Length: 88
Figure (cartoon, one colour):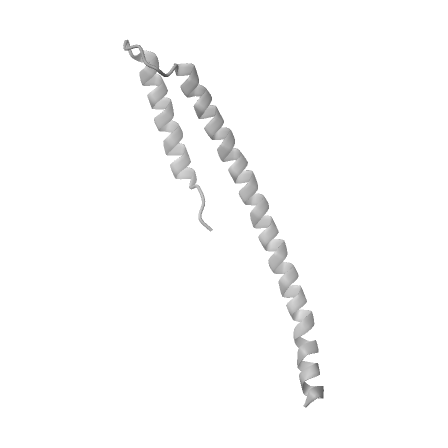
């Protein structure tokens, strides 16, 4: 399963912060307000936190599924062998 690496997320946030600082310190009138850039950074961070939460939930679900699957497999395998023996 591929996902968003923390390194990439951190790098993007740093670049956005740098960009926001450049806009703030620039004498040129920009089309993007520094506060807008800050809000974008906050939203990006919230989305990443939500992504991490959902990723943890998915990993827990996968783990539960595997445990259940393995338990069922351990129960069924001896029964299947027994039925095969009695069928012959």
